Amino acid sequence: MRNTIILLSLAIFLAGCLGSPNTPDAYDDTEDIAFLEEFAAKEGVEITDTGLLYRIIEEGDGNFPGEDNWSFVTYTGYSVDRLDEFDTGTNLDFILPNPSQFDFFPGLAEGILLMSPGANIEIVLPTDLAVQDGRVYYFNIVMDSFLEIPEDFLEANAEREDVNVTESGLQYRVIEEGDGESPDENSIANVNYKGTFTNGYVFDEGDDVDFELEFTIQGFTEGLQLMNEGSTYELFMPADIAYGNNPPQGSRIIPGAVLIFEVELLEVINQ
Image (tube, helix red, strand yellow):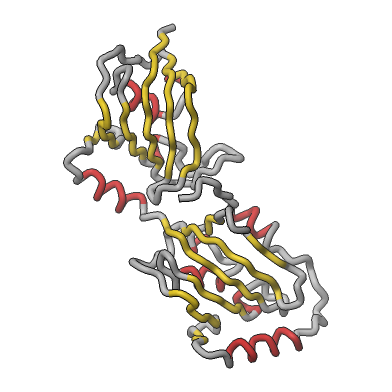
């Protein structure tokens, strides 16, 4: 799994990458219509009921995302007049807001729903499935994975024999048990940690980091108090004991996502 990701909020996505400036009503869409017709005539191109054109370059494997899933994709794209051009590059991943939130550019969301992990498709968006200013858009998209619905993941994870569930909903798994001191809510815990989403993407990690338990998120405060120095646990945190739907500004955390932390407790510092 590549560890570098770009998390773009819906607002940034709409106002930035896909936000064309206002254009005159007299926009000449001759080239756009010709592009649509040329693409539609290519072998293997399918057209959906909404008018989305797509061609499968490589089939994926497994399930398809639903309207409430967050998808991890890389892509290149452009408007036919090249006013807008997009490229995530080879080492960056774009997290597409779940399609149920994606009203402004509905064709892109529809295209994602046609993909399973590993799939590569081309899509062409008529203007009414894009920014509705006369412009037609082309995208080449590769899907890496998508996040399970949080409730579905947590329900299945709780059934594992090696996973424990606390009253708050925190789930944890003991990787290695230590024999040192345990912190309390007023302690400082010195830890190594790695935070991932349920598909394995790393959104944060650190070594030899101090956490003041009374000032960190509830899942960390509770989880660390279950541990002894020398322990390594895996903590599965529902959003309501992590960052909820309002993650810190500038972070790479998806609103409402289950967060998984592998934590090694190195030392307890009592205040």
